[in-house]
Image (cartoon, rainbow, N blue to C red; front, top):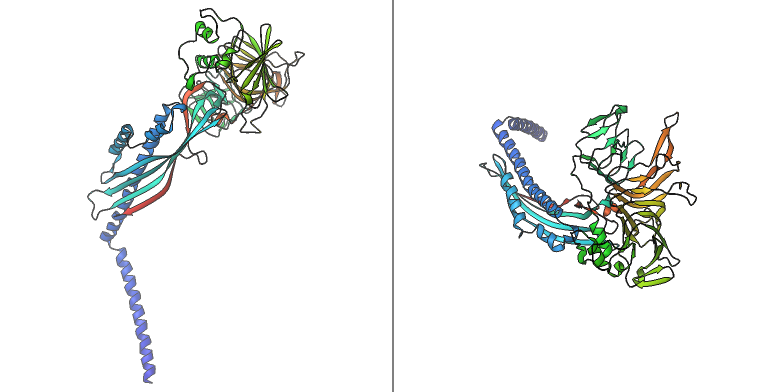
Length: 570
């Protein structure tokens, strides 16, 4: 009986203990929730930590942003050929006083994040760990680079007790790609975005461009044109059709009527890009080899030209003809007077250029494998122990150009005046099927137009002509000859791009009873972008914009990555 009472009393004590503990815990919780002074302390402490972390991040971001900006500015001053490994290593070096002073200036102006929070730079370093120049077809396409960085930064509260201090050690990479911007990069470039007669050019829902598009003027949009790469305009505004009630807006759309699609954005107020005023570089390249491609900057007078052609030096124009001594000089081909050009290949697969000037026809067979050029003139053949550098310069008009660009050929064909395309002009190796194709063509009409006058042998319009190449008329237009009177004959299928002073006309259209477009005269447009141009590939010695294109990591498109972030609180 006594044992039973003891057990019962023990159980009662346990129950009392449990109740007492529960009351104690409840009271403790209530106490913790109702201590305003202590709670305020914890709140201030947590806020202080957040502010210190933020300050430390500001410090790290300031260094990375400054390094990226400084790198961009310095590289932008250089030609790609000048961006050597040593030059890259020095830009972000601790021995570069300009870079160090820039960092110090930014630090001085940002270290005081708020009245009670500061950061300090313990140390930072940028080491060039990778540099590679990629060459394709004999020219540098691009440079890739990687900097490894280490930054140690400390943030702390001022006059805060106990002290709140955070030191962060961060490592990572700055990496990117550098390309020399060539005019060949553009799918479409106009200095004035208007027709030759000054009328407005509307991009409509039939418009699609897959490469970069730029104008130094103002674009005009109607309905839903589509752009799959960056679009830039030097104007601060754009015109919108607005169902016939045109409106000018500082905007990229005019909903619901005009809603263009910009996959990579539409930048207004972009810097103007000047078209090249001369073709001196291309002319000198045709005349001779110049070490390092450092060409004279002075005007190539006739006396200078004659000296390269092996003629008596005077101020008279060279006689009309096709000159081959330029190949022996290490240059290309120089032609004086109007000429026609046809490209092809022989039974051995070697490239063939047929150039007719006056009463003479020159047939060039390019034996790249053996570094020889065979030139047939009538019944005679001469052998030159070099191959041309890809530049054909005609001091006159190119009255006809057509044919097949052999798969190993990189060509720039320049006319001082106009160029007329008279039939299909295509690559043997289509880059749409082979992205690594070598063959490329640039046409440049310096002081005239590029005319598309493609015809059959009987003189009737050639249906659906194919033209492969980058077409440039810096003082004219790329336009279909007699576009408003010739019979409709399908589309011009262009693989490449157009760069011109103004926008050229290709044809005219009417509409059926349902409002669908119906060709009336000339050709429609079927433009395909050559994506090799997007990655820096270009015809030899084709004009550049004097801008260096800078891009992030080719795989991630990111400039800066963080590999590790280590925090130490005190």
